[in-house]
Length: 400
Image (cartoon, rainbow, N blue to C red; front, side, top):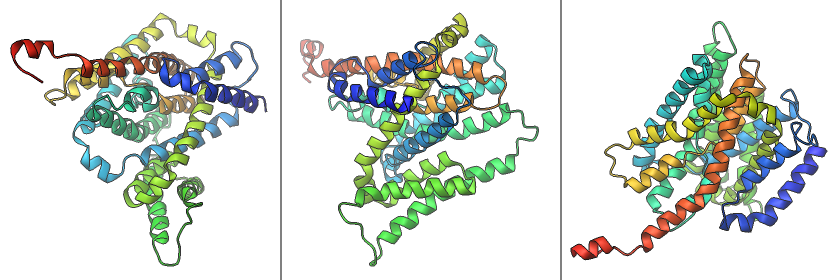
């Protein structure tokens, strides 16, 4: 009850401050993160949580499911086909390169084993558009750049997930890894995520059924709940089922996608904010200090080297202007998916769980503070470029 009361209070404060946050470098995400930190055991002790609490694992599962389902709805196959060239570079090259570079830094700088290093790389490779909202939603930013960031961030959570699952299983020390069981879990999850939404959409298209205007937004919710229930009952992978279900709805049910969009975004946002509050409560001053100087250097390199270097390599000879490449390289915020993957690792039985979580936590904290505070600045940078007189072109006689 204390946690619910704290969340309600912070949520009300976030709503009242949201107008100001959209106009300044203030961030709702930072508000929930800081509130969780202050209310947690490490500072005031108002909200007392431990990694063993069942609530944490349950919230992590539901929140990640909701967000992956919502993300999948943003990227139907038609969207991917029409805008794949640049996002394809970011996903096909940028994501695995970011994973690899981050793992190299974790291994050689911090001294973690290769499996734990690769696990950290997988956790920190996805990006989150929420912390770059002013950039993605600003119409003065080139549409090509906004589309690139939207598609990339909508897809990379799902692409990184199998790597997180595999490296986590290996890190748990299973002798044979149970590859058959893991493969069945992944395939079953994807199959459930495709078949159930497809059948539900086809059923509505028959002459016997039709949703009323009032109930149409609940169609997507019902599909999501059914996928969640059946995947849980059959031990299919919940998260891959969620992402596959979202993509399937976006591909075959355009009307269902549109009617659920607003409700789905709100539900996903509520779960995101709740998870950020819990994540902040799990972080203590002792944890932030325990990583030492090398841990903070790792966080800086993960943000300022791994992503920018991976994007630079990925977009060589792409024709993307330098200013847009810089924006893509910088806006690789470590957001909600990384938060949940970090919490899942913390609640796992691996020996290095606390160390991995601490490194992930400091990187995410630094990313949330930096990225959510610079999206407005970079958006204005593009705005100023549009308004700047072309003195150089005019002086040379090349009118723009």
